Structure formats: structure tokens, C-alpha cells
Amino acid sequence: MTVEQLVVTYRLFLQSEYELEEGRQLGDKAKLPSEHAEHVLWMLDQILFELHEDPMKLMRWLGFVQGVLWCGGDMRIKDIREQTRGLTLE
Image 1 (cartoon, rainbow, N blue to C red):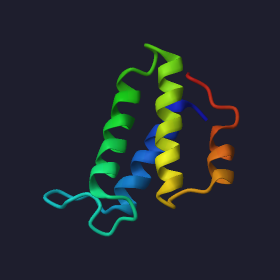
Image 2: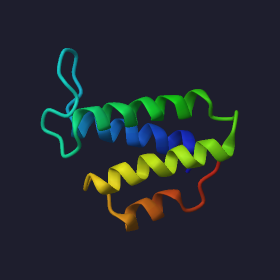
Image 3: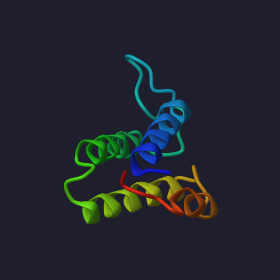
Image 4: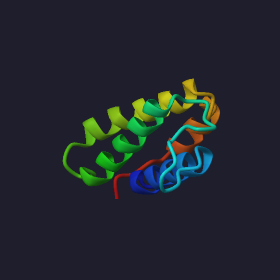
């Protein structure tokens, strides 16, 4: 799996889990506070935008996103580990 594929997967998960719709507040039925989920989505967009600029920054940000998803109860460590095993930039 590539970083881009993983980021898209996380974006789709957040959008479906938190029912992101036009005119609706993100996090209305969420485990995460709205501002946390919105910030994570913003970070995921930035990761895609800066995908090849700074790989170390990208991995730190991805780790932060995964930490938020874990702390929010949305993902298990086991699942995150499996998702990032063999992760590539291309």
C-alpha cells in the first residue's frame, strides 16, 4: 500500500464514520470532538499535497493521525500496524 492510498482510506473512513455532508458539522455522531476530526482531515489533505516534499514530516503527520484515530477508539493498534506494514511513498 502507498501513503497516498492509506491517506485516501483514512479520509473515506472519517467522512463515512462522521457522516460528512454539505452543511452538516463534522463529528455530529462522532467519538472524536468535531475540531479533532476536522483537523485530522486537514492534515490528511496536507499529506497528499506535500507527498514528496519531506518524507520524514509526512511520516510524523501520519503517525499523529493514526494516534488520534486510535485514541478516539476508531482504530486498533493491530489494524494500524497491518495498514502501515510495507508502506511506500510511490
